[in-house]
Length: 131
Image 1 (cartoon, rainbow, N blue to C red):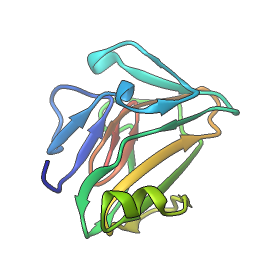
Image 2 (cartoon, rainbow, N blue to C red):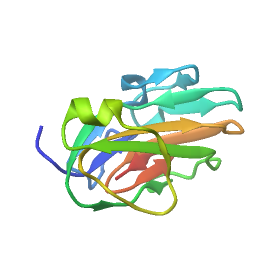
Image 3 (tube, rainbow, N blue to C red):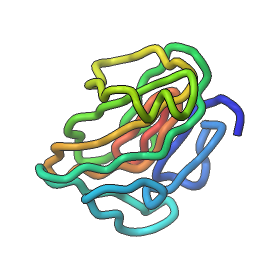
């Protein structure tokens, strides 16, 4: 897929170029529901890692709860690289408002108090994550 904006956790009526389900990620958290009702629930000791996506080499923000109201978020970390391999070998950085993508990005969610997410664009969302 080409570079663009991504949404996780919402399948319909999104403004982003590409959509993914929470179930496309992996980790110790729980994915419940499906379609627009799909959420990921993250306890304090759990994490959920999304797949590497091509965003293009531009400034990025993560938007929470863009399409639905969630229950807040724990920590969001990201890593970025000019290639998929470079992204996967990069260190995790704590998300603090925006970052510059080097072309490919991966997101990891952690330390939530029953965090519910749903969609991703040039930003990430609680019920949805967008960036």
